[in-house]
Image (cartoon, rainbow, N blue to C red; front, top):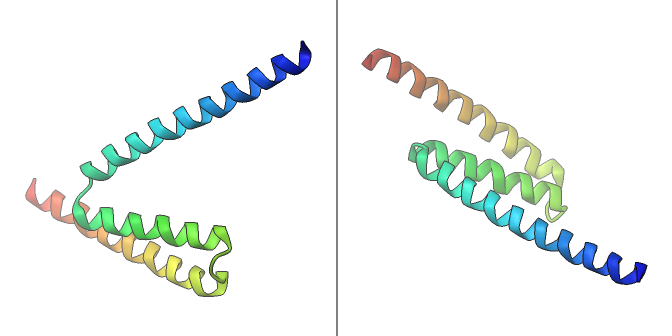
Length: 89
């Protein structure tokens, strides 16, 4: 009986993770669609570089400088967008 309950609990937790992941992905898609195209591309780049680094598929010594540069460019772009928006108002 305990073993059966444990199996049910594990199955439910796997379903919960799948459902949560699915809804998370939908939220990310909606967020990305709402961003200006340039910001979206930079954030996508940061996402994939982070995945490459964390997965161990590429050497951190190669990825980290690229990720740092991407973050800096992202900050510059975001700052420029904010300045332009303020000037328009």
